[in-house]
Image 1 (cartoon, helix red, strand yellow):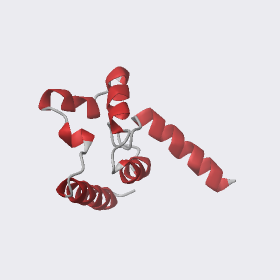
Image 2 (cartoon, one colour):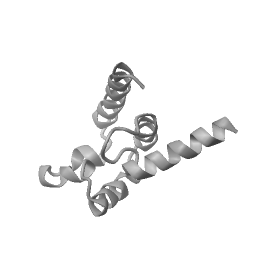
Image 3 (cartoon, helix red, strand yellow):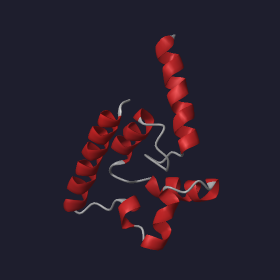
Length: 99
């Protein structure tokens, strides 16, 4: 993926989050207090697990997961998955599509 595609996809995801929040939905990664917001981009596996667990039930989980799987080079937790989890899923999807 190119940087332009990354920017486009990220902007689309942010518009989705804005729309959902505007409708009264709670988006966990945006509702976190500033001190705990670092868990979403932490490299610590324990913090990543906490962030991923907080994603469950998010109304944007599917859209965020699609973004994370499309952009596995991006750090942090996306769609309830850590970087390692997203890369593993992306590898499985590539193998399945090649078969």
